[in-house]
Image (cartoon, rainbow, N blue to C red; front, top):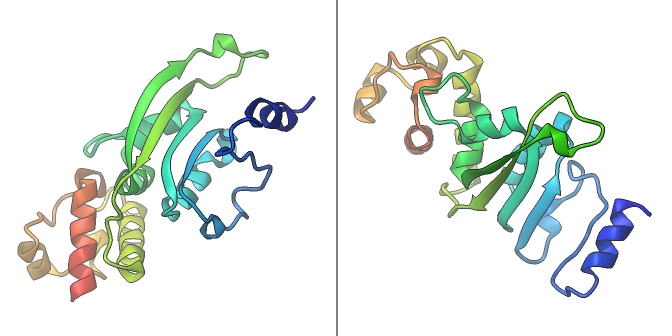
Length: 194
């Protein structure tokens, strides 16, 4: 019996549950007609791609995932840490993130070579004014981390000049990992308005 059949049998009495056997990367999340709670054991090789896709769905209440520990640690990372990056910022802009617990590799057979963790991502209020503001945010975060070791005055020069940094009260000699999620939202808000 497959996991799909087992899941459908176990959840058949719950009218508010729906088990889908789909390629999530190809599925149109906008086609959902109600809010959803997502639970899953994501394929580790595409989990980051799935998280990025879920950021674009405004129908999510929360998500609970088993992921590779390294990915969970990156999602919950804070600014000024080596593992803080684009994934941290994107996930934290849309969700309150909390690592719930680590899962020992000893509970699996065969024993995997990577460690796992369980994470909860609870939807936040949509942080952007409109889709254009959101697109600017994506572009700014991507630009900042393409030049991760560069100062933001260099990596974000196509968006901000020296006087802009003064206006928004950010030091231009900071690096991408020094900015908080709110700093990135502030920058995108400012760029949207100019």
